[in-house]
Length: 356
Ligand SMILES: C[S@@+](CC[C@H](N)C(=O)[O-])C[C@H]1O[C@@H](n2cnc3c(N)ncnc32)[C@H](O)[C@@H]1O
Ligand code: SF4
Ligand code: SF4
Image (cartoon, rainbow, N blue to C red):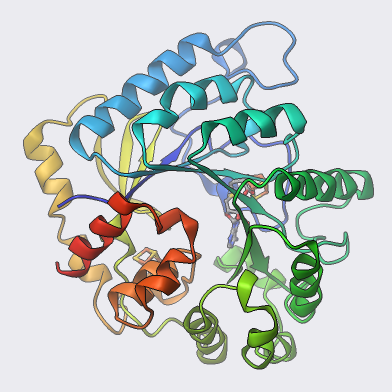
């Protein structure tokens, strides 16, 4: 079994933001960032991350030697908070058909953006809950930061770097999502908006109300006005049903398509559920272990309809597009709308996963 994407996470505990709902606060403490041997951030004048990058590159190469994936998704905490992370990305991007960089957008100045643009196979995925501070208030409380962020995003669009904008739907923005859609439609760029619900028991206070969700569902009637920047209609329909039902009804194929890996070598069974550890690349990535990861029984459990696991019943993510394609709900043209999956190798792999 081959995976479509390696979802590679580096130092999930390092971030310059403090979003109210951030689940990465619960990231396991597998790498304690203690002061003596800490990954250096952009604010560290002294020191560098050269040794850290050599080690991290070695881990990534180990994954590549076993699960060669056409897509690499790379994410922090906040990736660009890591000092000189761009030099690391420049060393590894050529091994993939497509690289997706996930970021909160704060550090994306012109110099970084032109280096990203130069890679030519890179898609930016920026998290933003609203174009105004009010709508984005579960992520930011500071208007200077908000202005800086919107300015950075406008520069991404101006430079023609493909951009996904991931919006976590909460009590702050769900009801007024159309305002954000209309704003980005007006900017006329290579933008795809991807809304998804906030999740986690500990985030209940941020959940949108029934009234918020009902207002959001108007998206199904205004879809045609903005369809160039929205995900497929079926994605939004499934999202509205999820809101309506208060739970997921469908089985999930995402773990068969995306392998979740970490810079310390850990591999988990699902990118949204890190509780099931499958192995560690620094110790035991023999071909037998790799086979057992590829044929893990959990994948069948995840794909059962209705979902059997509590973690699945409350889960709806931007990768739902993969599920819709495998379930035969959207066309290949709809899938390609997400540039992330539009490469030749990637499309071939999705087809092979569809047949499993
Ligand atoms: C944890 S962040 C890491 C990357 C980067 N710092 C960012 O914010 O894009 C990755 C994604 O997880 C989302 N996220 C964090 N906590 C969440 C929650 N409780 N429910 C749903 N999504 C969440 C964020 O909105 C973001 O889109
Ligand atoms: S920017 Fe990303 S990692 Fe940082 S607190 Fe917000 S959601 Fe979490
Ligand atoms: S629904 Fe379940 S299997 Fe699918 S991404 Fe979410 S937690 Fe993972």
